[in-house]
Image (cartoon, rainbow, N blue to C red; front, top):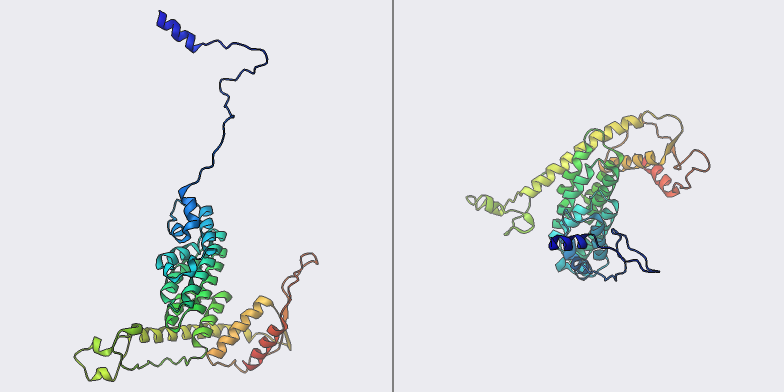
Amino acid sequence: MAKQKNKQEIDFKKVKLKVGKKILKGNETKTDFSTRKIVIKETASIKSDPISSVLSSNETTTTAVKIIKLTNLVSSTQLNQPDLVTGSLINVLSRQACDVDQKLRKEAFKCLVKALDCLDSNGLSLDPSLTMILTHAKCGLTNLNPEIQADARTLLRYCIHKSSKRMEGTFVQAVLPRLQGNPSSLDMETALEIVEVFYSNNNHSTKPVVCSHFNSLENGLIPFAFLHPEAPVLSNLLNMTFPTLCKTNSRQTFTNRLEEVLKDRIIQLSRHEGSMWMMGLEEAKELMVTLKLLRFLKHKLPSEVNKPVIEVRAPGGGTKSTKSKAKVSTTFVTELNKLWTLA
């Protein structure tokens, strides 16, 4: 009985009332406590070792944290050290450059540009890095999100201008599927950039190239003697290589596809009549690409195609409040008319 009485007194303890003192409620939280700053170990490592922090990102890492890591990386000096720019880093940055988040793509692209510039300035080959970047860029081009497609195309064009002649076939094979059917003007612009980078000062003949004899596997060229040891005499006379044959075939396919697309464009051009042709800026850019590709293929427009003077309409329109202030460059219009006359 004594135990029950003590328990009852504890459970139902009477609160003594005092004058001027507030009675606390049973569920009221006390807030009279001091706070201390908590420093997470990972947060400290982001600034001390940005590359390691970027490589440690995984599926559970939030987008906001990834952006912070990339921002610290692009402002650090680690991307100026070629020994730290590894294939693993390029692969992670390439994947993030095609992410669904726009800010993350932007920061990853900045890091890639700085990393490639570091390798290039130190005389290191960019081909392995560009191959990895191209893999992710092609995935971005097939994304349904137009913003991701646009950023992936920017990444692809940057890689084209940073690549060596050895990467010609790789980029041609990446763009060829985009030229099937009725390619967009953006895809044709990308094809033009490939032409300007790889074929501008090049004879685009499709004849197989016969190379001289090599004593090693340098530059990926396989000596004839290595493939056919039973014919040592011929090995000093002929060296047909697999990379050379692939390069020739891809160039021929690329050229043939461009000719097919341009035939349809020529038919559309032949429908215009009159002495002046007014067109929008986007249409003018598409015509410029078409004319430059025709020059590359050394084709002339048929004589029945009328060639009126071209005037380009500034973008925008509608009411004065919504009208765009953008202007069309006079140099652009002059160059367009010159190519149009010579086509």
